[in-house]
Image 1 (cartoon, one colour):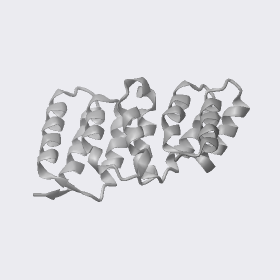
Image 2 (cartoon, rainbow, N blue to C red):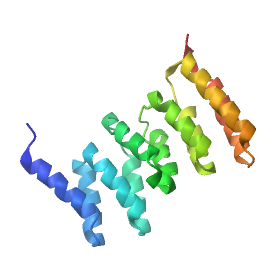
Image 3 (cartoon, rainbow, N blue to C red):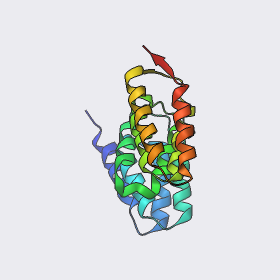
Length: 177
């Protein structure tokens, strides 16, 4: 059974993240470093989204880059898929190679984001794929190659070379036949 005191403490920390009092926000970030739970990920990303304070953004980014708990992956993927966080997508995607979270089962999400996102999203996706050490299903990879080939043909900006690099990185992944 969940400890109501700890649950209340986490709720207070999450509430402080959205405070207009920056001192409370910084205190909440310090407490999350010690007592963070996956339930705090989306509120943390939301604070990253709404804050104008660069120091708050830097502290949140640093905290996210230090994540080691694999249980946060689903929350991060939810945020990456949410168009509300378009500005934050490069940071959200880079968490996976910065913190070494293993999210190879979400390769399709990353490739789709590279195709529809901007250049910076593509750069981060390439870094994530370059850091994969997993084995992938051949059919899934073939589908992704097809999607990339189609996107490469349609792309009219300098992003085309980045998509070609992502395609090349996918070609060199380990496949299970």
